[in-house]
Image 1 (cartoon, rainbow, N blue to C red):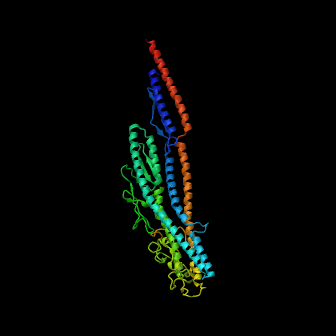
Image 2 (cartoon, one colour):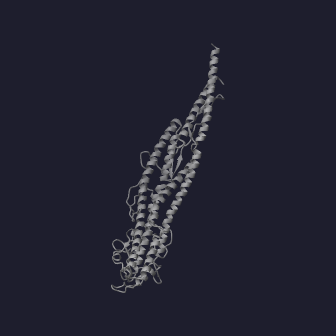
Image 3 (cartoon, rainbow, N blue to C red):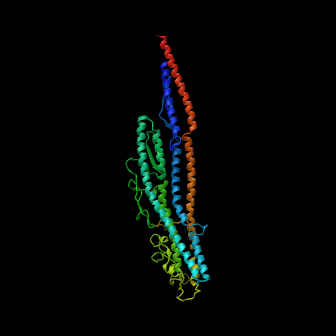
Length: 509
C-alpha cells in the first residue's frame, strides 16, 4: 500500500467515524423523543485493483420491524376505539343507578310493586298513597335520566364522528406531504430516515381515528389501506372524507330516509363500512348500540304505562296525558322516545286517592285485561279491587287469568326498525327492566375490560418495538467509545503517514 493510499484510507475512516458518532450522539439526544427510532451509519469498503482504499459511509438507516409496527398501529386503533366506547357508556351506566343501592330501573319497579302491597293494607291512608306516588315519580324520573344519558352519549358520538373525520383528513394531508418530501429526499441524498420517523408517527396518530395498513415502497412512496380494503387517497391539498354536523333526536337515524349525514369518501357513502379506531366506534355507537338502548328503555317505560292503563289506572303518561300504544311497531308508533317524557299523570298527581280507586273503566282491552269499573266517588274506603288487579296482573305475566301479556318486542327496534335486543324478553315488567339495566351496564363493564386489555397489549407491543427500534443509551454510549477508539486509530494512521512523508521529503533534500 502506498503512502497516498494509506492517507486516503485513514481520511475516509475519520469521516465515516465522524458521521457514525454524529448519528450516535443524535440517538442519545433523542432517546426520550416519542416516535424516534435508532439511526445507524453503516460503511462499505472501497476496493481498487483488489486493494482496500478506504470506506464509504452509507445513508443513515433505521432498524424497524415493519410487521411489528403494523401490529402496533392496529392495536392502537383498537385501544382508541375501546376508550371511546368506555367513555360514552360510562354516563349511561351511572344513570341506570346501582343495584347495590337499590335505585336501578328493576329495583324501582320492584319498589313500586312493594308500594302497592303496602297501600293494600290500608287503601285510604293518605300517607301510604303519598309514599306510593313518590315511588312512581322516582321511577319516572329514573326513566327520564337514563333516556337523557343515552341521548347525550349519542350526540357525543355524532360530534365525535365529525371531529374524527376532520382529524383523518388532516392526518392524510400530513402523510401525503411527508411522503412527497421523503421521495424527494431519497432521490437527492438517499437519506430520509428522520422524515420516515415523522411519517410513521403521523400514521400512528391516524390509526387512532381509523385503522390503516401502510404499504411502503423503496422509493419512499406509500399506499394506505383501510381495514375494509379501501385505498385512502393521499393528497396534501385536498380532504379525502366529508360529513356534516347534526343535532340528533331519538328518531334520528342514518340510511335511506334518515337525517344523519353520511361519511363519504370521494362522494361515496362509506359510513357503514368503516372499521377500527374512534371513527368506526363512534358510528357503531351512534347507529347501533345507543339507538338499541333507547328502544329498550322506551319499551320498558311504555309497557309499564300500558299495563297500568289496561287495569284501569292511567298512572304514567307523556306530557300530553297520552299512554303509548305498545301494539304498534316501535319505529312508527308513539313508543319511540317515551322514556324521555314519561311522568306521573296529572290526575293521579293531583289526587293520589286514584291509586286506590282507579282512573277509568276498562272495556274490551286491546291487550287482554278483564273489564272493570273504578271505585265510584264516595265508594268504599277499603276498595282493593284495582290494587289487586295491579299486583296480580300489571306486575305479573298475565293481563288476566289465563291470558298472557303480549311479549315485549326484542326486534324491529331503533328509529329505522332494523335493530334487535341481544336477549329474550321476560314476561314481567320487573324482570324486563332488571334485564335491560343488567345488559346495558354489563356492556359498560365489558367496554372497560376491553380497554384495559387493549391498553395492556398495546403497552407490551410498544415495549417490544422500543427494544427493537428505540434507543438504549447504555448501548449507544458503548458504541460511541468504540467509535472514538476507531477515530483515534485513524488519526494515528494519519499522523504516522504524515511523519513518513516528512522523513521521505527530508531524505531527498
